[in-house]
Image: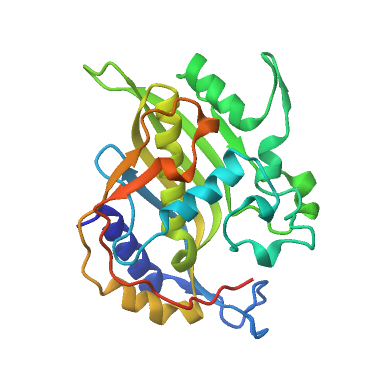
Length: 282
């Protein structure tokens, strides 16, 4: 059984059985037909994945690893806020006529800041510290920038990564761990997508910094299931989990900015059929 499946099933069951509903309240998201999109939600969900043991891809349905890595690199590597730099259409609803999503996500990653060591953006700062000061407790990114929120077409959902390095007994390599903080998550549409993205990010950063991967912790302030997603979730979590796939990352790549989605592969990735025509609230 994939451990990611176990975590997902337990989380969804807990949200449906013990969560609180927003039905009838004033909410921002709407469905395509203009109807208010209500949710059942849980506050403060924390999921932990040991990346040294297995890669956390769902087998209950397939997660498109190439597409989710492409989006992660769009933000972290290309540092772009334009959907024309992305090989999918998942951001189309939030882009303007020029393809921009405003000062969100990748835009914030490319902003250079003054440090004692010089001018760097957030990604370069993370890599610098992991290589030069790995035991620092200050290795983190934050793209929820209040002064720019009014110019963002969508406020960041996954907004902060904190990296922490440990050393195991009798190990010649340091271990890279990470915490992803997320203010809000559409569990059906995005949960495993985000988990896989940031698991891959940790693998990539560990490789270029000559470390090994450790634990990935996912903290979700508002983990919710939309009303029209509940039957789909119920169908999904009744499925029998399959074994986790084997993760492969091209060992030849030593520079984070040289990775492409083709450098990532899930071997033996067997899954149940996809859930089709998932409506997305915007």
